[in-house]
Image 1: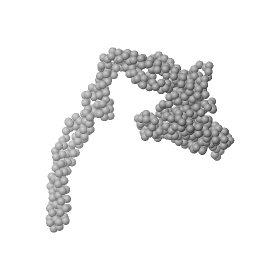
Image 2: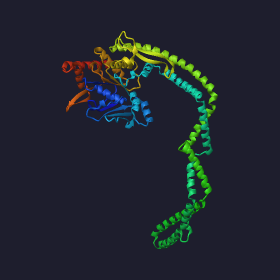
Image 3: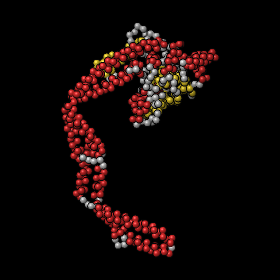
Image 4: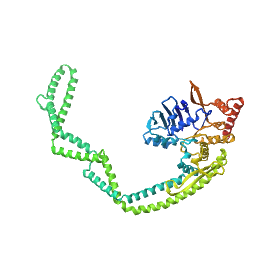
Length: 558
């Protein structure tokens, strides 16, 4: 859900910040106030093309920032986390457009690409009514919409899983057929690599132990001299430290006989003497174990060089090398025995092809049934939306080969006027028609993975009772998803759960746009303005109140 939208230096917008709510958010305002600019800003958030023409005159860059709640889009949050972008339930999308061409995208503060943005944002928000970022203009979405209406997800999931398994076997068989020589070369390489690693047979942790042993062997003479010398000065030589400490203790003991307060100091010296004696004996024992062994040193060096050679070729650590060898041996086994199950694979492929065709034909039959029902239902919906003679027809075209989503391609055909043959909707529908078509589809099948929908130009070419029906349908869609709607009709605006006025003001010789949330009193004034134009009378205010009361009472009755 879209929580906050902040726009800076886009067209006549200087600085604008607006907080949206769940349910139906309506934006109204006079022509030229800047409503379409807000749509342009959201298109930037959707990954749309960034033009320097959008930048406000006299400014170097424009910026749009949107805060989304991901509570309704957990899959998006999971995918962002996999990409290293932590969300904690919210996503901030920031887009900066610069006259110097340094356009930037940020996702939760992390620099991202426009492609990454375009992969995420359209799953959070969709715009219906403009020719950018529209679901109905993307042919692949037609099949998804038809399947959603027909509730064919379980059947489609079964088919796609079968298709994936079928394609894996087909790909494997083709690979074996085309790459026989390459497989032989690959087998030779894998055999050499496996044998080379096996010849060394490195052990986990071995390199560290060898490095430590080599250090001791390389400095054996130095260690021997140092430890023997330390022992001699502590214990072995004439006048060694422990002998002198004994004399000091005897003198101190004699003094303690005179003054008992010296007894603790004598005890401290006794403890120090014991520690020094233990240390001296430990140094002597260590020296007896130090041995200069040039042959062992050479053997250790040779072993280390062998391991380092493997690391240069197969991995940064011994653990990586051992893991790689397991994979190498597994691949060798597959190549060695791959030909043995070719007939088994071909038999499995043929079985899957039969089942794939059966499920595909069932999916096609169910789609054709759903297409008939959707066409009839859409006809009724479009009649309510002032498109009484419009024809909406889901068309299924058979594919030459089974595809990942079935045996046919789905495309919506549309004829807005009587006497015209249905044609591809994406090529002939206007922005307003697309908005109303999508509104009708959402009314028939409100479930959607996209939490926020924006309807622009949805009321183009309609008025009166029909516009009230549009408002009612928008309100119903907003029961399951957040809806933002830009409208110039009071019959639509009166259904708002949250009403905003887009207003243009002139200060210091420059125009700027603001968006103001309306309370009850301000809302009556705005509806009265939409009803009565420049001059607002008490009559138009009363009319506005009556409209609000009618919608409120209708909501209570529902």
